[in-house]
Image (cartoon, rainbow, N blue to C red; front, side):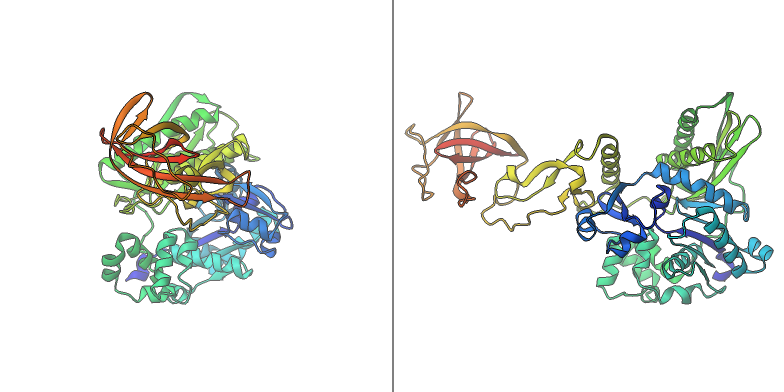
Length: 528
């Protein structure tokens, strides 16, 4: 039976954790941004109309006094450690999914405290006392399965009652009435896939769950099948009770106790690279990892980390750093140097890989680049880091400009937050040139008789272009098209511009986009 396999889990969810970690007062309007979108906001900002997912300009428009904060993963993980330690005093083997989100098996603690409701109430009191932030919301949810308990915790947080216990065996009935958007809130299903479900008429989780799993797999692939499983509330991921094979363990014992955390983190990186390589050789990926650190005085820090799509080497190192910094900064932190670092994969899955879009789309490299830009902006200042951003225009050199990264939506291929959308009639048609010159390169164009070619004010060419002189070298023009005149900002004498464009191909097989302005020719761009 499915119900016998699905573990009973408790999830603790702290809404807007990045602001709690930054110690921002709830009555102060502030928001944390990632890639220029709101990922967390204070109650005061939410009352002013700011919501998660808003772009920066929109958030500042509805709340001009909004304080803008960048996401700091290290700070979030470090500040979450005291709450994890507090909950660990009530239940063993805390599983940290991400800062602000953790879960633990409910059966043992529930028996000890007298039932699920008593356990949830006790946890609520403990979390409230540890956070000491009455203005912020958090929720404790108990249900069958990881996804159902996570949804229950979020529902409890939004309702404000902080506790939601789903009766055993009722998780599927609980989730089927909820909106399909909860898949996006869980963070385990791509937002575009959730939007596609909604456009197809699947408005609730129950509507998706009632579809045949085979049909969903055939139409949407593994991501769709995963969403279908979450929608049914049947989390078929039993708790890992058996020890993994010894060859999957990686550890390092220092010859001398190490007191510098960076040295320990560096060693954790070497171990993580080794572990990921071993698992990859067997076609596996670790989704649940135990990080164990011991000091020379016998102190021990043990934390379980979980990630649905698998923990890469960089993700393992990041979580090890959170654990070490949180442990060292605590009131009962390290009293000696570190002697042992061990990484133990507690649950592994077959590595099905990640299917990227056939025609592009946002990739892992894009995610890493966006995160690096945000981090550099935080270090160097808002206007020190610039990126190319789409602005639109009729000439290739007008379409992109380098602008401060804070004014760009990094989730939307570098589009400005307030772009000029066009439609730019008269712009250069596709395909676009591959090389656009910062400064047009002056050339001369002649007809077959050797006379210069000109363009009249009416856009009429004096003769067919036959030769191009570039840098003193003459090239024959074997094909040409144009002219396409454009007149911009004719109403402003200091900004007006009239230019006629030509496309030409030389006898060397190179295609150029030429412009003639005030009877002077230049190369604007080159086609590959």
